[in-house]
Length: 265
Image (cartoon, rainbow, N blue to C red; front, side, top):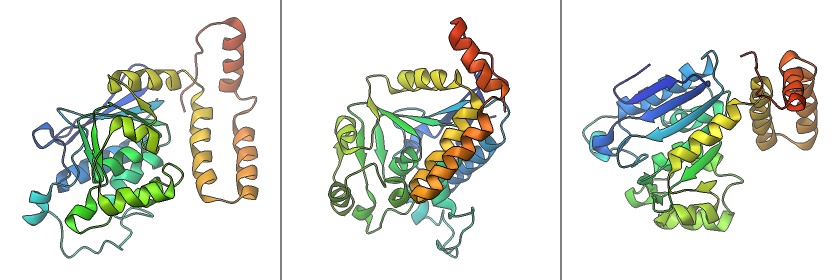
């Protein structure tokens, strides 16, 4: 499956390869890019055989943020209200970042070059972020008299210490990938982020798909619910996988020291 702004392929291991594909503009976000990202996220939710997703950008950057030239030329719909919930709990720009959290399997972002503004919020929607140490990153919106509004405040909870996040938002200070790890915005710092992301995705793809999907759903509960609800959700998730064929296969493969053969969900 390919598009002019985003490409999507599924490899033999069940790992979806998603690429932001506007390299001439450093994958900046124009209306067509927003639509392509959302369309891709929706396709992933029903894709058969999906085990993990690797999200990266083509060319010199992951994503440079909003294409201000496109917006100034009327590329956005001035009549649209951002408060309208057009995609469940989100508006269209928010969905471009939140769709990765709504994906049923883990998403690993490989971040290189530039990752500014909306691009950083999209990367923050991934479960895991692998970043090059020299990547230029910033919560850029305040420079243009705006606030982060693509899901950042929801996605950064628990990632970045509150006072540091405030400084990054208020001052729109640029930082490197190496600094991002200390801040909580990068999981790993690597010279080849895409290669490391592929290794992580392949490892996840070798786990029981039912258990991986259940674990991802539990993270949403953990972030949003109280202790009692989290405890119950854990029990319900375990009841859904224990003694099922894939769980038994995981045990047998471990005991027999062989690669597991799972049924896809």
